[in-house]
Image (cartoon, rainbow, N blue to C red):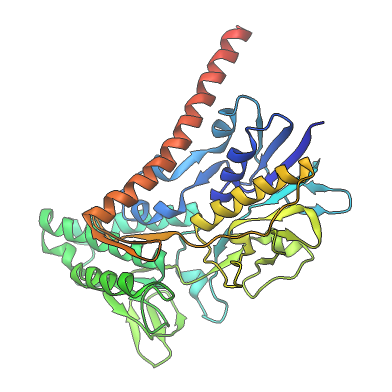
Length: 405
C-alpha cells in the first residue's frame, strides 16, 4: 500500500530526504515550497561579491522533481497550517493529506528587535532576494567609484558586516578579495572601500576550533578587513552604525549575518520551541508526540547523543534528513528505530579567491589552496548531483512532448 510523504521546504534537508526516500516504490512523495527554487545558501558569499552567477546558487525545484520520473511531485505554494488530527496541511485553498510529514522549512535572518533600525537598514543572506539586492548595491558601489566624474562617490566609505560567524566571515573575505583585485585593474579608488566585520563576541567564529579562528583572522587581516570584536551594536540608522560604547561607524550599506530565526510556519505549530523559534523535538526528531511528523534542518533544535546543540548548517540538515528518511522506512516496515546520532564531521571556510581553511574529524587541518580544492570538490559534487537530476527531468519533458505530438 502506497504511503504518502509530504516534505515542506526545498532546502538542503528537504532535498536530501527526498533523494533518500525516492528509491522506494511504495512511497508517494510531494515537495511543497513557497519558492520555486532551491537556494544554495552556502554559496551566498560568492554570489554577493559577484564571483558566482544566479545559476550557481539557485536550482528550479519543479525541474529537479521531474528528474525522479514522476516519483516526486512539486507544489509551488506556501503551507500555512497543519492539522495533526486529520493528518493534513493547508495550502492556499487546498488541503493535502499525509501518512508521514517532514518539516524542512529552514530559517530566516534574525534581525534582532532590540537593535533599533537593524531590519530597515541591513540585508540578510538567508533569503535569495535580499542577497541579490545586496549584490546589486555592492556592484553599483564599485561602478560609481570607477566613474571619477561629477556625481560619483568621492572619498573613503565603509561596508559593515554584522556577525562574525561562518557566513559573515565568508562574505567579508570574498568582498575584500574582490576589492583587492579591482584595485589592481581600476586603480586606488577600490582601496577607498573598507570592509568592517563586527561581532559582540570576543572572537570571530565563536564556537569553532582555534586553528580555524587564528588562521581566518590572519587571512582577513591580510585582505584588509577591519575586525571589531567585543563590539555591541546599539542602533542602526541610514548613515551610521551606533555602538553601545558611544562610538559610531559611518557606512554605505550593511549586511547582517548575526543570527537566525526559524521560519514563520513554526508560529502555527503548538509545540515547545526555543528562543529562536526552533521546534523542540524528541530524540527521533518527532514533534508534539506525533510519531509520523518529523522536523529536520534549521527549523528544529537538534542535539547529539550527549545533549549538545548542533549548529544549524547544511551538513546537519542533510544528516538529519538521511536519518528521518531511514526512520520512515523503518516505521513502514515495522522495524524499531533508533535515536538520531550525528556530529559535525568538519567545516570549510571560504576566505576569498582560491583560499580556504578546513578542519575535519577533529584532527585533519588544512589551509590555503589545498583547503580551497577540498571545499570546491564537496560543493561541486553536490551541485553536479542537482544538475544531473534536472537534466533527467528535462529529457523526460521532451519525451512527453514528443509523445503528445
